[in-house]
Each structure stands twice: as structure tokens, then as C-alpha cells.
Amino acid sequence: MGQWGQPIVRDGVTFLPHYDTGSDPFAPIGPASKVDSVQVTDIRCPKCGIPIEFDQIEYVTQVVDHPLPRREHTGEIIVTLSCHGETWRVSSKRGKLPNG
Image (cartoon, rainbow, N blue to C red; front, side, top):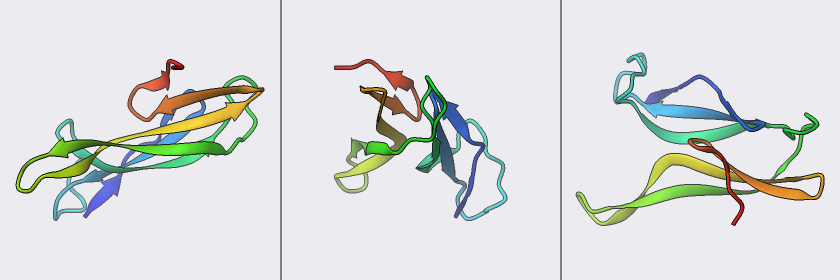
């Protein structure tokens, strides 16, 4: 269960986080609430404002050892975009990332 949070706009990309609120879908979203998924709802070129498509989406994961070793989504996604002959990456948590 869970609920959708408020849209987050970072460098022309609108991210919509979904929070795991346990078995109560009406539990308030607070600082301890964990993002269990993120959707991209709108992408616009930050230079000219036209709608654009993403080139790639990366789901950031981390290694978790409890109760079994596995990779778990961190609640962050990184979107790769291109417009005006430039390519850049935008994180749902950190905004525009340096090229490299």
C-alpha cells in the first residue's frame, strides 16, 4: 500500500514519488516515509520549454543484506535527456548531474 506524493520538478523534469505507508493507505507522509517508486510525468527542455522525450531511465539500487542479499531500489531515478544538440542527466533526488 502507499500513496502518491507531491510532484517534484528538477531541471525541467517532473517526478512523481510514491511512498510506502505500510498497510494504511491514508497514513501521513512524513520525513521517515520511504519512496518505493518514482514516475516521470512531464519532461521539458529547461532552455526553451518544449516537451521532450527521455533517452534513458536508470533506477538507482543499493545492496541490502537483510534478510537475504539482494539489490533494492533507493527511490531515486536518473533520466538522460537530449535537446539542442546537448545531452544531460537529471536525478529525482539531486537535480542536474555533472557530465562525465
